Length: 319
Image 1 (tube, rainbow, N blue to C red):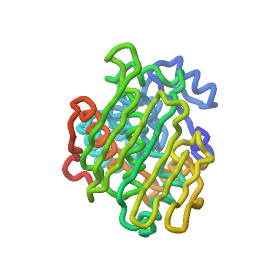
Image 2: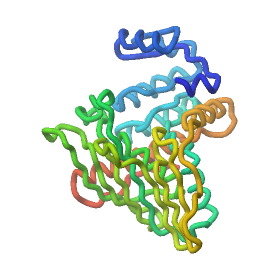
Image 3: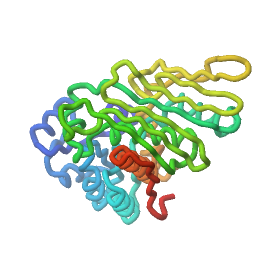
Image 4: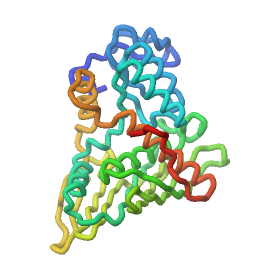
């Protein structure tokens, strides 16, 4: 909400599955219209931000596109590849902009690492590592840990962000994954709360990741290692770690290379989305980016369930 308003957007309505929640949020955020009917909430607006439960993204985006509304959708784009493809097709038919809120692409640290990789400052890239671990607040748990069928679990919540950040920084696609997942809950019906992955990229670079809902002091990190140097970042994958830093290590020693996230993470995404609507460039992360991060997340989930290596299934024409 602060990012939308800071970028000059007028938030005129809110939809929720229950009118009580819609009215409460509208009152708290000074929004004029509250509704439990989606089409009513979308009447008279140019664009919608879909931030509902993960299993509702697909239906709501398709309905928004059918009404000609541009869409800024939370990740994961959907829970199935077939649904994500249907969302992209609906957006194409309606000629609307579909963006995905992979906000980590807006981090100063990740942009600096991406630039170093592209410019060859690290030499030939050999490997990378990312960590996105935290203690999920009690108020945010609910379906995220109790209802895997609703898209709960750390894979759909955090892995998709890590995957997209790695794709963005390394400018490569992830083609194969292995994974081990764990839940601290009392039974097997709970969604996974931690996962460790090994991934192989399109040119053979290997990547490892760790994501967790139950590691309060682990923090976030990203490392990229090459033949000429390494970039080591700490506190660079979360808006809650604004003082993160990236250090360059090479033959000359270790020195600060970049700072971590800034308060522009969400504003940049909203700004690029609004500009794309009027024909000025593309969103920071497109619907295709959302589909690709979803494809990797699904492969990670399958690898964790089967204990096997899994190839990432990108649908034809996903470029």
